[in-house]
Image 1 (cartoon, one colour):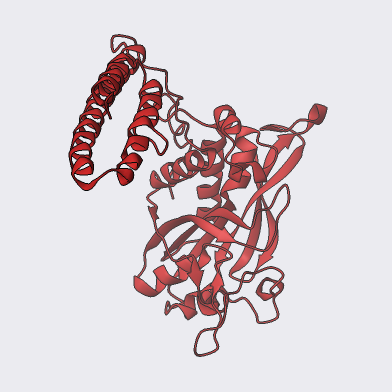
Image 2 (cartoon, rainbow, N blue to C red):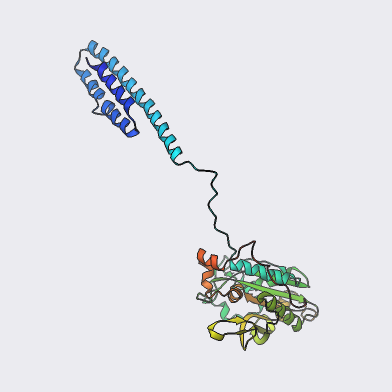
Length: 361
């Protein structure tokens, strides 16, 4: 205990001399650690007389407190100095230009939907929407699709678990249910297009479990096949930007239209590539037809008074044809390299479409 003042002075000098947090911690352990110099002196108090122990204990506590206070003060100073040094080293020059940001791109599907909507809007069509989860009635029955039709089978359609009444809803296989819902809600005339997501149990280079369709419906007094042909010929030529694009209507069958027709456009496949326009070959792009009288009757329309036509196309399909995209699955890969190649700048892109080349319906 005779050297207490000298030991205290030595330790305090070491605290003042510590240049780093690590060095200061070493001084603390040497002085106040479990085996530190001051801690060992505290253990010696047990062998002293009571009066002597009282006086020595008070002196040791004063030294211990002064060393702890000095260490805390020095630690604060060192921490502040370290922060200042880090701020100086990591200073940002705010006068420098910001880092360039990647240009956002509009997805080809979004672009195509905008084009289709814009073209049909000039013909007087409005956009209608409906739920993705549909009842069997709206998805099949009201559209005159028979019970034994393959589209009703589980290998083609996604069915949901039955509800409390035992009925099973489906993920809509086409956007046609919106046509039924619209006819149930409004009186003719009707002129709508229905872009939206649809779902089918299929997946390969040209099919996806989830894809997009756009369907159209026109109902009125005196609507005939000539109106259907004029509407779709104008659309095809406007969308593909070919004023004299050959368009043909090939007889087909759909339960919800009668008569029905597939719509083909002229193309050439010379050299292994596909070029839309004049040529000696044809490419099917959509289905169409006059609305089946049974469908009109299911919706409460008088088939003797009203007629109409409907059509439907796959958005991915026409986008692939127009923009030369070889694989449908890449639309959903979220590949930024693909987006940079096929995407569109939202503000610098050319006009949404070239306009109609013929009259409106």
